[in-house]
Image (tube, rainbow over all chains, first blue to last red):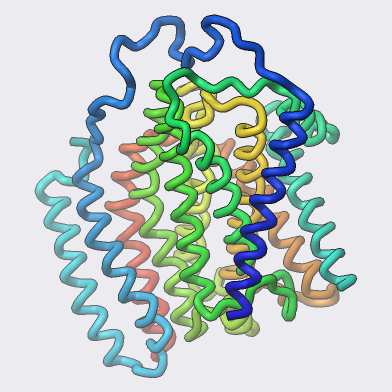
Length: 117
Length: 297
């Protein structure tokens, strides 16, 4: 419990430090409003449409694979803590689980999923 | 109490040194006043907000960035008894904190409604998918050896043999992944000045950019500290007291980031994705197997 209070205090003091910086800054400088100053940088010509449109994320295949492996990591941490105690049984249990995931990775590779789509 | 003040001073000196070395690695000359002049110039810079920005994200992204970096420092030990927050799940906690770096970077890319920052944000997300598995698995294999997620226990498990010798593969993967996490040179496509005109940070000026830059220095420090604790034996070392050793190791790792980065060409994000999933993740799994077999012997 005490640890989390300290963590919260660290968080609070970091935000407070930023707040002080912002306040000091506000007292010192003012932004002048000028036409054309607040246009996003786009090398001279502006985008016709807003940028928050559809963007093709070329790595969606990897993202699916990442999701599978990320779920596996949730099991990995508690397993790693008790690993030495359980011995060879733990290695085999996790080995089978990882092998299945690894076969998935190999299958994705064989189907060309590890290329830019 | 005196020790804590000393550690705080050493922390500030490390941040200063990282900043100076980063300046040297870009401009190739020593400028020891650079951190102060950069601070002053960012501090008085006008704070221009792009039109049609997303207000919430624009304000929260820098704060989230620096908070995540500070929280990841706070669970890492500086010496045997000197750890800000002694968590039982520290190894998991630093992972969670590093995940928020990605969140804040994507928010920062989204918020200003500028093309370059948006592309930078998406690229950083792609980079996350590449580096996150090696970094997580490298930490897991150190947890396996220590039988605990407590950072102090992880350091204590390296009393006889440092993890860098016990599991060199894990160290290499962690090192490369931490370069990608802090978007340092070979992996700096989300923020590179030459390619994306600053990328995620291209629309940020003034105080927000300043917060980002301080946060990045703390992030580099925290990654180097994590490397020192997880793989380089933490506070163990002959002759000198523990906290001196840890700052020496952290400084050496942080400085090596800049020297290593300049030796390599910039990696495209699809290349880093491809190589990380074809070689990085299988190698990380092999590292876990290697540690598992060594532990059973």
